[in-house]
Image (tube, rainbow, N blue to C red):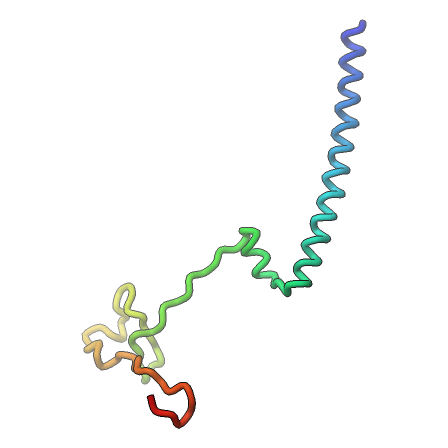
Amino acid sequence: MIVITELHDLQAQLRELNVRLAEVKKDEKQAYLADIRERVALYGITEDELLRAAGFRKSRKPRAQAKYYDPSSGKGWSGFGPRPKWLVGKNLDDYLVDRAAKPWWPGEDV
């Protein structure tokens, strides 16, 4: 039977191609990883930066600075979201954080 023999030959060729494909992929992967290692060392890339670039970690939005502060408890509130319990029924102006420009050098007035 010529058809069966031809089918077996094609299946054998397919197996060989799949093996060669896997070997080439493995070699290319190792070369690529070696290149990444070199670049990580060259640029001082951290693990966190690498994971973010690869999409395995998401960047966090920076937290908003406190607009209101309670010196007795040390708690702060940015003004976003629901009003915290420590500010309920109190005048917000009494807890405003001083946002006046600070001198950039000690002893220098702005």
